[in-house]
Image 1 (tube, helix red, strand yellow):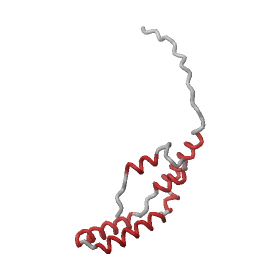
Image 2 (image 1 turned 90 degrees about the vertical axis):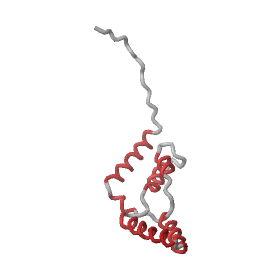
Image 3 (image 1 turned 60 degrees about the horizontal axis):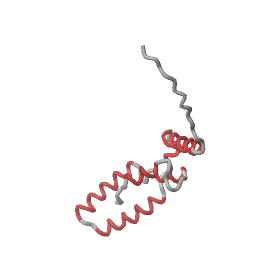
Image 4 (image 1 turned 180 degrees about the horizontal axis):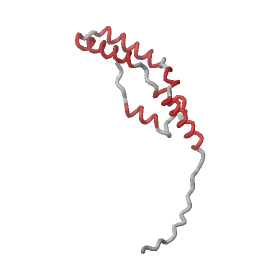
Length: 111
């Protein structure tokens, strides 16, 4: 199974990522496997590592590459993902707006 680079994922979640494409950024955040698939993969990898099954390891490596390009889009109906899309959309909307503040500070008298 491929190692997960959390720093790369977190860097991609920032507003200043390289692609500047919110749809691509959200697609990269989507998990590749659901809970059941993850559970079965972890069980399979236990036996692959225990018995050093090199051919099975290579097969799962290929399988992981294919599954990485075919993500499960079942999460699109979840409220969390809808909120994430909304946040990215608002970020794109507000990106061109510059906020200026007036520094009209008056002296405050202390009693």
